[in-house]
Length: 347
Image 1 (cartoon, rainbow, N blue to C red):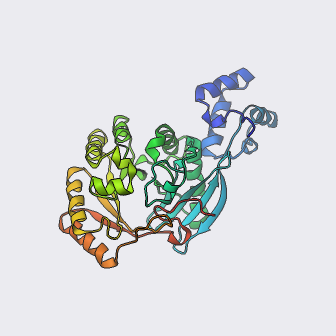
Image 2 (tube, rainbow, N blue to C red):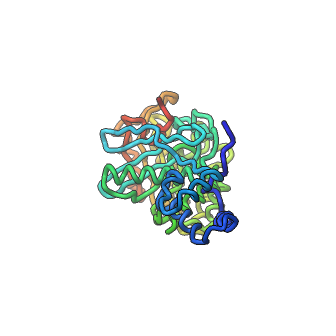
Image 3 (cartoon, one colour):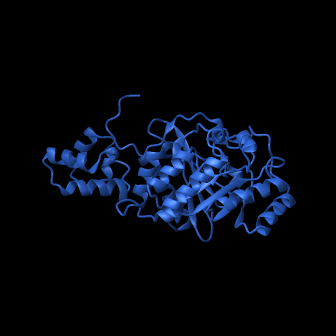
């Protein structure tokens, strides 16, 4: 691939100001360019219509503007829409629009592939090619928001970092993306409407606390003891449940932000009475608002299946009887491989 010009969106305000000054252009040009890049969502320099043609040509000869492109779209019978995006270097990632009557949620990716190899997740069987840049994450939200407005006549209400990759292993770019998404100079969304989901990187969960983030946190737990969690989530070998409980308490003490535990039920693995009782014990040790019990969505590479409906209901009953705030989350977008754990760039 030929050497790309510097990405204009990666320039600091100071660097852009120095560049503009060097050209002998007026200072307000900086503001105009930033508005085009982030608020008006320009896809190319030609879009920047209040700049002179010669100035736009100058920008084009000095910088690149590698915007994410929609490569393909699939519509589910339940209204879920999955988009496949192509990056400037020809990698593919997926993002999902999940509509309900109350909210329109974007599920976005943070990496191209993933290095964590969780056994039940299709992305875990792909190699991690690279981290996404903050502007690529921002573009996903912009494009899914445009899809929401086009299809449902409503803007996004929520964003979840639950797509491809582990957000906390791409910490700085994810933080920069959220900063842009929540900035009045960007999309102006409330941080309280954003949830970052992690497979459990204890050190980085504590860093979120130290950085006083304002968004919500979800932990993908999926097993309530180390032996079972090691079996399906290799990350547990270096981030034990005990370490995660400590990290979540630290995060809450520093931020007071909402924490959710995510727990996918697998038949014969983590859906028994003893599993429910172990999960209750964990719930009592962390300041979690909610446990999301999630239906397992089968993938080709993993031998487990979804439990029978009566077993799911009994598991829920045990949690609720013991004062756990639990919610059963039914799958959305299964028919287009857009449900939890299914994103893998098929086709």
